[in-house]
Structures are given as C-alpha cells and as structure tokens.
Image (cartoon, rainbow, N blue to C red; front, side):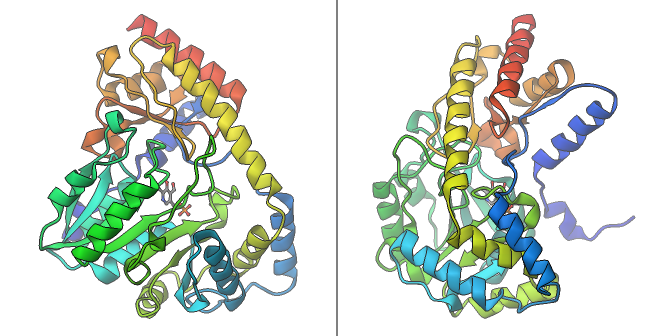
Length: 388
Ligand code: PLP
C-alpha cells in the first residue's frame, strides 16, 4: 500500500515492539522477564476500581465534553494548585486519553514547520517523533551521565536560535531517572522568558521520587504560567495505564484549540475513567505511596545487582522506575546487547538508542517488576555477560 509521505517522519515507541517480540517468545514456551515496558505491575487501587464500577452503573457511559467532565477538571485544578503553589482554574485543564495526547496536541497546535523544538536526548521517543511529524526540526539536548543525566544549562542556551519555539522538559526523566534541580528550573525559566519560548513540562513521574528529593514544576517561576503546558496523568502514579487518563494544564487561551484537536481525533476521554480519576485524586493516597516504597526497594536491588556485573556501571536514579546503566565496558553496542539479552537470556529490556542517539552505550531496564523477577533477571544478565 502506498503511504502518505508524512508517515516517513513518524517515529515510534520501541517498548511496544519489544513487548510484542517478548510475547512471541513466550508463546513458544520461553519464560521472559519483562523489564522493557514502563508500566507499574500493581493493580489499580480498589477504591478507584469501585468508583469506576459505580460510574458505569450511574450512567457515565456517554460522550462527555471535549476538554473533560467539569467535575474532574475542577478537582485537577485544585490538585495542581495545591501541588505547585500556583493558582489554576478548571478553564486551564484539558483531560485526555492518557498524558500522551498532550504532547501531540500541544506540538500540533503551537509549532510551525521549520521551527525548532529542543528536547532531551536520551528521552521519551515520542517527542522527537511528533516534532518531526509536524515538519519542525528536533534539536536534541544531551543528558550526560557525568551530570547525573541533568542537562547543562549553558548547552541549552547555546541551542536556542531565532527559530526555537518550544523546549521540552521531563523530570523525573524517562529513561534515565534523572531529575532537574530547582536551580536548573529557575535558570531554564529565565531563558524561556528571555527568548519567548513555550515549555512543555512532562511531569508524569512527579509523584515517583525517592530519598527525600522533591519535585519542582517550572510553572512556579515568574512569567512561566502563561508559556507552560504541564503534562501529567494517572497511568504511573495510580497504576492506571490501561484506563487512558491524563491531562494537561495550559494557558486558558490555548485550551480551545487543544480541545478542537481532541474533537478531531478522540472526541473525549472515557467518562467512567474520568469519574474514577476524581476518586484517585481525592481518595486515600496510601496505596500510591506504598507503590513508591516498593519501587525504591526494587531500585536498590537492581542498581546494586547491575553494578556487580562486569562492564556495567549504574547510577542510582532519583525518580521514575527506570535504570539506565552504562554498558560500554561489555564491549557491545546497546542494540547488540539488548538483542542478546532477549534472544539468549530471556530478559526483555530496551537499547539506550531507543531514546535517541545519546543513548548509545546504555540500556534501559524498567524495574516495575517484582524483586524476585528482578533477581532472576540479574542472574541471567550476569550469566550472559560472562559468556560474551
Ligand atoms: N511521558 C513520559 C515520559 C512517559 O514515559 C509516558 C509513558 O510511558 C507518558 C508521558 C505517557 O503516559 P500515558 O499516556 O499513559 O499517560
């Protein structure tokens, strides 16, 4: 079939491809440990499931308004006001099927062909994909291990040109688990104001942070609320990946255009998912907190285990549920090693290059899996590396 030219510009998320390949191996009887996909293995907390069942019985089975049901938009505005210390109203809240459409919609709505968007590399692959798809130029901003995967502000400044329209931030970060500091964000905010840039701040992992570190949103700094789109959602914090529920906070003047993109694509977000989302935000938070405690336990196990494997060097990330070990000491490329791990050791993970060119020399493991499985995976990785 002849495809439209623009399809050549669209990238993908390799995690879904590797997951499909791992499932195919399982269908042949192999027992693969899944450390490829960024999805909590926990069940959605019971109070949220109960709220969804009740919502179905109460008739939340119809189309709703494109920007989201007023009830949840109000709750999200209150939640974000409390979380960020910046006043938000429901007119700034756009509810979408997962946080991902906020990337697509905000880039489509704001970036013209030929303009430039600076994005973290290694980073979530959909940023680069969508930037290219709209005919804009993706400008990678390197995240380096030496800086604990925080980018260098001077390097960011050096990439800004007259054509720069947007900067994408993601903290805590996928795939490295790195976090920007308050000082970093303050400096980035100054640059954004000085150069009149839009900031897309992907804060989907902002509730999954360890060791007493705290999350700061760039929206808190002077002059930022009118130029920032905050992306957040329920997938990671409340183990709700399959519910497809996320949101963006944005300037009120932008929202009708983003809503128009929603009307042209999804119409709206599932109504009963939105009602369950209200319970997630206002109900007890203890299960969400327990998940973070368990993620931290797993992080410590996988970081310690990887650092014992010859050729591996792994930083201890501050947030999210990924580790991004340096594997240069094995003498293999990232892709080669990821392939060998899947095909010869039944461990599914992602090559660092799935997150951009600056990911060469690294692998990404998601530790959203049990400690028992992580330990088995570590033994298998160690065994494979010793045979190389
Ligand atoms: N942003 C980042 C950095 C992610 O890693 C993900 C999911 O993997 C998302 C956004 C989107 O999540 P969802 O669409 O499930 O809310």
